[in-house]
Image (tube, rainbow, N blue to C red; front, side, top):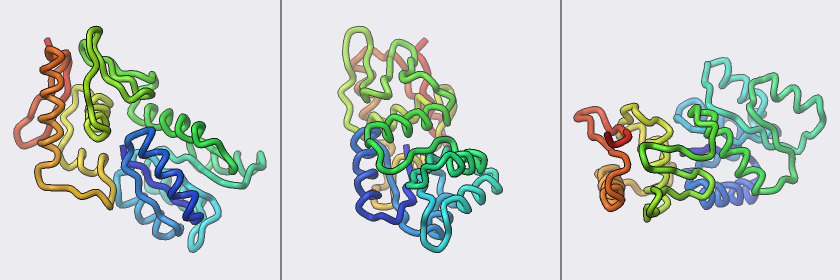
Amino acid sequence: MRILIVEDEGKLAQNVARVLRKHLDAAVDISTDGQDGCHMAISEPYDAVILDLMLPKMDGLSILQELRRQNISMPVLILTAKSSTENVITGLNAGSDDYLTKPFDMAELVARTRALLRRSYRQPAPSICVGELAIDLNSRQAHTQNDNMQLRPLEFALLEYLAMRVGSVVSKKDILEHLYDFNAENFSNVVEVHISRLRKELQRLENPCTIHTVRGMGYRLEPTP
């Protein structure tokens, strides 16, 4: 999953990004001013935005209102020192999905962000079953009754993204946009390499589910018949 943090406190933004990368295997971009953050949120297909309210150049509430005005439905978690009931109500009424006040616990931020991502893909449960494969989004583990998949963080992130859209064709472009941030070093066949590794692990587990290649379109994860 790919997350945008719009936060002008640079050290805090970096700490939040580090925690999200560690616990969610997320690709994370950071913007430290409102105008740039608004442009990024509009132009890139993020899975969630963590948005401060007090920002230079353009405040967070105006960013949120602009996103909703353009019918951009990505979930937004407001992260701010403004903790009054009036500010919370204003943010929620403007279209935010959740609200967390500073100072906050990083574990709570991770849990709230994880819940937003699940709801965004209509997967409210903390695990996804595809055929005989169970994918635990909290522990970041995938397993059958008899064995665990041995996955690197990016491989799990790819499996998670395919599972969130199980039965649908997911294009290579979609995968690149949702699993890699601006600083990632992508090579031309990076998706194919990770798909190949996932398939080998699924074969080792006697194919509890299958990743189909849909020629010219992308990939589709389905239960094995």
